[in-house]
Every structure is written in structure tokens, then in C-alpha cells.
Image 1 (spheres, each protein chain N blue to C red):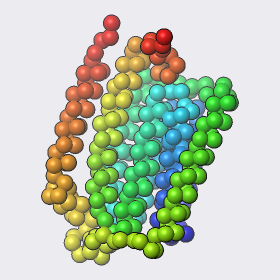
Image 2 (tube, rainbow over the protein chains, first blue to last red; image 1 turned 60 degrees about the vertical axis):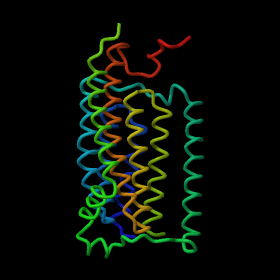
Image 3 (tube, each protein chain N blue to C red; image 1 turned 30 degrees about the horizontal axis):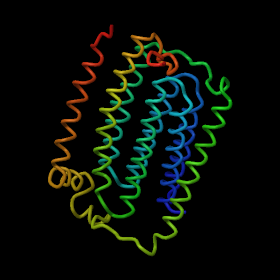
Image 4 (cartoon, chains in turn brown, blue; image 1 turned 45 degrees about the vertical axis):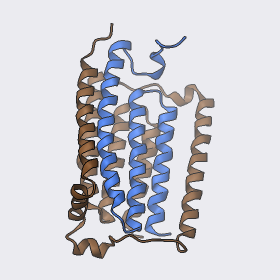
Length: 174
Length: 100
């Protein structure tokens, strides 16, 4: 377990909590941007270079620019603190969060406890991927040979999203 | 504790925080950001599991999830602009036209 990954995990967890509790939407958006960049760094550190690049370009680049653009377009100011207004809802939500987090952690620890008995490894170990020409090459080859139908379908979904968002933004509701 | 357990715990924590953002905040744009955080946590979990099992199927899956998330946020933000144009606010409690 490398210390760099621990530091990145702590920073991204702290940024996520800041995002939950801050008042202004632009601070939340910048905290989310920080979380996404930290996740991209973690992907790069564990050797998934292709996914790290995609995360930086698509998530931290395109999607967050859209979010910050709409915050500035709608001229959103600080929202009054929702938590102080409804403490009952806040406590209920916190209880739900603790329950979900506890059950996920229980499932994870259970999985890693039993992992030694029934672990089946795939063919793409780090050495194999390196011998085949690196992570990006292996992933791109899989995308354009084994999964090309899914690739085309996803491009159609993007086209539908573009047309749909233009239609939605232009429509005048009476 | 190994790297895999640490990454899975981080993914679980980010998922919980994203769920709380969706549940507790009253701005529509905050709800959309919470959904992005949820998707990011799921991606992190999938990539870490796939890496520890020496597979690349998880990375391919995450590629598609990122694409669909981009489409989803484009649609969601244009709905949000429409909401602001019709109600003058993006709070969830201001959109009450369908209320009986």
C-alpha cells in the first residue's frame, strides 16, 4: 500500500465531505472537480492509464465545465443552509448514510476475507499487459474488436443526447 | 490492509457522500452533482476490482459508463435550464405544478 494512494484517498474523502456541507454551488462544483482529479490520479497510480486520461478529459474537463457554465449562466448564489432548517430530515439522512456505508463495508470485508479460497484470475496480469504493448493498446484493441457493437451503440446514445438537449433547451412551454 | 481494500473503502465512502448529497440538498444542480459523485464511486469500485482480478472487462465497462454519464449530465443540465426558465428558481420545492 503506497503512501501516495493513502494521501490521495484522504484528500478526496475530505473534498467530498466539503462538497456535502458547503453552501455555495460553485464551491461544491470545485470540490467535485477535485474529487474527480484525485480519482484520475489513483487510476494512473494503479496502472490504468487509459481510464485515467478519459476521466481527466471527459469528467474533469467536459462535464465539470458544463456544470460550472450552468452555475454561472443561472447566476446561482449561496443557498441558505438546508440542514439547519430541517434537522429531522438531516438526522434521518445521516442514519440512512451510515446504514448504507456500514453494509457496503461489511460486504467488502467479507469479500476480501473469503477471497483466498475462490479467487479466479483473468488473463491480463500486469506483465501480460506490458508485453502486449501497454494498457491503452490492450484496452483499445478490446474496444474495437470484442466490444465494437457496444461502442457503436454508445455513439448513437451520445447522438440522441445531443439532439435531445438541443430540443429541450429550445422548447418554449406555454 | 492492502491497496484493493483501501480503494474499495474509498469508493464506499464516496458513494455514501453522493447519496447524502442527492438526499439532503435542495438545489437541482447539487442533485446532479451528487449523481456524478455516485457514478464516479461506482467506476472506482469497478476498476479496482477488475484490476485486482487481472481483467480488462471492467475498464471497458467504465469507458461506457463515462460516456453515458456525459450524455446524462448534458440532458440533465438542459432540463435544469428549462426549469429555471419556467419557475424562476432551481429549488426542488419550487417545481410544484404537478402537485394535487
